[in-house]
Length: 410
Image (cartoon, rainbow, N blue to C red; front, side, top):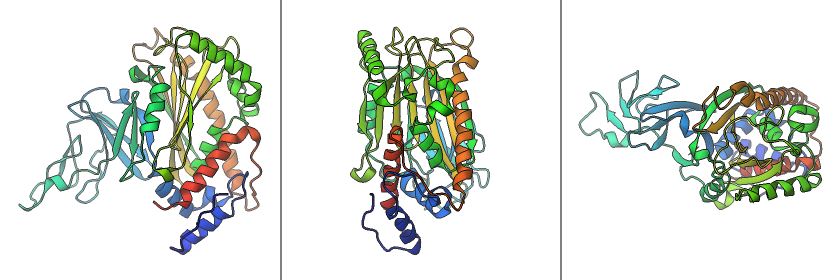
């Protein structure tokens, strides 16, 4: 049980700490963790603002001076490509009176001019002009608030933390996984956002377990062996690894799922088989697009990456998926799906967009309905969480990790 010694800082802290201490090992979270505004505020403070988040693939801002605004919880983050090609992330908050300096969702701009008093910022966040300010005013002290940025295998990660968690284990494992699939040279084929009337943890908990896959996702379960317990697919997984090795490819895996107590970011990468004869994650298992990265043939496998608590990646030899989970309030969140293909692939010639996005669109539509059913259920004053099933081992791990993060002050 995750029950460290708690400080007596405030009544709020005492109450939440008591709920953490009361958690029954091996069971789901109690009702307040999905509904309580004060717990949601602590979620943001101790989970969301502490960890790294994948916001996009860099192909969404391909040209110099391109930008896009990402809305995460109550924050707006401007992600830009500077004149030297580097990628920057900054808060969309003027350092004068707090107005939004960027009023478009995306575009191309060398400067952002605040519509209130015309303070002007470069797309690297530096303050370039502040009209009629005193002579002793220092522009260099009033740039936009910058966030930490890492770009790995084409993926853009940001951290709100003053001192970000060490990213080295994440970076190494991403090179060993997404790197083999050529994600650095991929591009975004499609993006879809799903507003969900549920606490963000209900959405993440649903994603990380496949106990529900058989009854809830018949389409996914026709092609993906993960819908069975792991011990029942060992032979399929071994055959998959043999095919991958025969291609001269070694896709990495590794369990570095850890709390932030040691100052490192958390990541877990694992592989699992598709059923015999299935090439990729499509409606009938047939190929969807050009092969990517080092793959010269399909290996009948999938690589899955969980990292940072809100970012999840799925790699097939011919396309990839980014899953983003974004808190929006105590009982609201957003799931964004991003489909990646070979950077040289052309829609209509190399892939059919409707076929490309079919499986994960169907699956996510089903997930949205399931999550919202659960959200309505846990609102009951009589809801008591039950035991976690053996196939929900990743959910159990996530819950324990979450409670540990929540128990430790920033």
